Amino acid sequence: MKADALPSAKVGKTNLQVTRLGMGTAPIGNLYDPIDDAEALATVQRSYENGIRFFDTAPLYGTGEAERRLGAALRGVPRDEVVIQTKIGRIVRPDKSIYFDYSRDGVMKSIEDSLERLGMDRVDILLVHDPDFENEEVHFRQAMDEAFPALVDLREQGVIGAVGAGMNQWEMEWEFAKNIDVNCFLLAGRYTLLEQTSLEFLNWCTENDVSIFLGGVYNSGILATGPISGAKYNYEDAPAEILAKAGRLQEITTRHGVPLHVAALHFAGAHPAIASLVIGSATTVEADDNRAIWDVEAPAAMWQDLHESGLIESGAPLPG
Image (tube, rainbow, N blue to C red):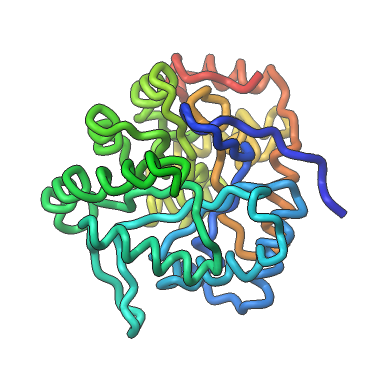
């Protein structure tokens, strides 16, 4: 039985609409823990049943496995019902090794390979993926000079609907935005209940009609688990000051009967630049949990207490 429809948001100045809750497919690419085909496909299908119509994937996720599984799971779903976002910048070799390539030829090969794995004739959004990894200066220059112009050409031809970048930092995304006619960015981990370092950038995006798809709303773990021993922050063990801050946030949310992870998801979606929250799911249980969290309405008094606590930036928008 399908859940009620999720609200949607427009992507920049394009005609694309994405559901405000999207599914990230890194987990079904075995990027964190191995899962089998049946569970991966069932998770995508459950997300669809739960109203999600926006799916984010990439060649990096399981060296193409996430794209393959996503396409298989959506076979039979009317193509116009879903928005598919994938990425360029990494090419998967036949032996499953990966290399960086932000050239125009690399863009075309990456798209061709992704379409084959997805079993689709088009994708809707293409992002330049992680040009800040490893050889940052070279990758940035090649992305500016070759990858983005190629993607903009494809958008102008109507082959794709939107162009942007996907990264764990906002500084380079802002640099791209000032120089390239982008529509959107996937930003992971830099706007959360724990940190709002990208607030000025998000405000700029709002003013300039650039949409943000927000990933990493739990800072890779700690806002989901709470400040427990071994809690992860930015993919590593959380330092003492982060554990302490998460603990203070949790004290406030718990006082209002709201789990920390529920507050974290709703806070992240409150900024007007955020078109969609892209949350990874590895199982049908996680897919159901994500939808259930979305449907919770936290009390206004909790947001007021968080605002007055000094734990979040004073200019950060609050839900409601």
